[in-house]
Each structure stands twice: as C-alpha cells, then as structure tokens.
Amino acid sequence: MRVLSVILSRLALILLRCEWATLESELRRLYDDHRRDDVYRPSWFLQALLLSGEDHRFFTHDGIDAIAICRALWRGVVLGNREGASTIEMQLVRVLTGRYERTLARKVREVALATLLTRVVPKPELPALYIRAGYFGWRMNGFAAACRRMRLNPSVMTPQDAAALIARLKYTEPRYPSERRRSQIQIRSRHLLALHRKHVDQFVYRDLRIEERYAII
Image (cartoon, rainbow, N blue to C red; front, side, top):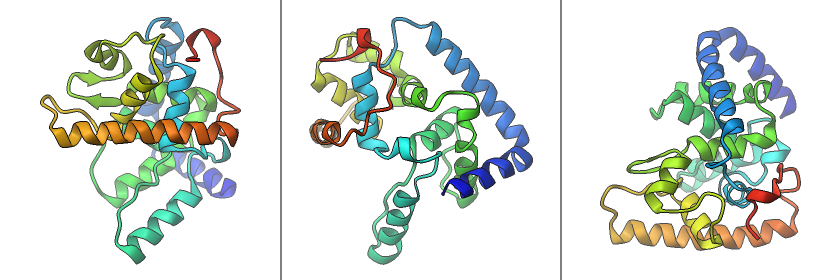
C-alpha cells in the first residue's frame, strides 16, 4: 500500500495541482490557527475517541486504509451493505474542500489528495485538525462552535461529554433533533467509550502527540 500511496501522491501533484494548491493553503491556515489557539484545542482523549470510531489503523497507513477499502467493497458487492472506508486524511480533505458529491471522481480525488497532507502537517497532528474543522451539526461548524453550542469547556470534559461530541461527527445534530437522532448519538457515544477501552490495551494511540494539560484523566 505504501507504493500505491507514493504513486497517488505523485499523480495528485501533477493532475490535481490547482486543487492541491487551494487545499494546501487551507490546511496551512488551519494548522497555524491550531498552533496559536490555547483555548479551543482538542484534547488527547477526544483525538483517541476519533481514532477509535473512524480510523483505528491511522498510524499504520499513509492516508489510504487498504483493509477498510477491501472490507467496504466486500460488504457492498457481496452483502449489499454500504460501509465507509474513509481515513482521517480523506475526511479532512472532504471538509476543507467542501466537496461531498457522491461520485467516483470525487472519491478518487479525495484519496489522491489525502496522501499529500503530511507534506504540510505532521501525521500525529491530523486528528486534532479534523476535530477542529469538522461539522458536528446545526451551528456547530467546527470544534469551537460545537463547544459553545453544547456548553462544554474544551479543556475539561467528562468522558461522556467527549464521546457525545465525537459521536456527532457521524450523527450530526440538526436544529431540532428527533428522538431517533438523540438515541443514535447516545448509542454511538457508548460504543466509542467501549472501543476506547479496547484500543488502549491494543496500543492504538501510542503515536498520538499527548499534551498533558489537555488530557482527560
């Protein structure tokens, strides 16, 4: 998969030069804002929950998770079930480019551009940047807005509050959430906490950049 990532990154630099230039500029701006912001900085625990729920092989790939892609293809073709295979890099590309159309061309561009992100930002910083830029629901476009709307202290959250926040990346909260959506968020929150306990023992987070003053005990 490493060879494929190298090939895709080189093709992206040639064929998607303009798109990469725009994405690179947005990524640098986001990273600069993140480094200067001592208030709305996603904690280690939030980042760990994100990896558990969205991309637990994050530190073993270069922006493309071959296992997840093969599993998604198998379940889609054989079982008829739709399943995502997006990595943190791919999701960050989607957010920063604002492209969500359900087309193969968009997906291929997203995969190729995802292999370039670490040219700008160290890989361990990408989970925090995705949380910072992610869409959590109505009037929750980004981590700071989500904290304000949910009335959360960004540096001191209970594990339950942290899990409920990350759960909204999958089940975004509408202006008037239904009971079904509230239930989905609650179930997802419990699932994330259970995955976290499992992944701690499996050393999934061993390469995350831990900053103790933001960590949740």
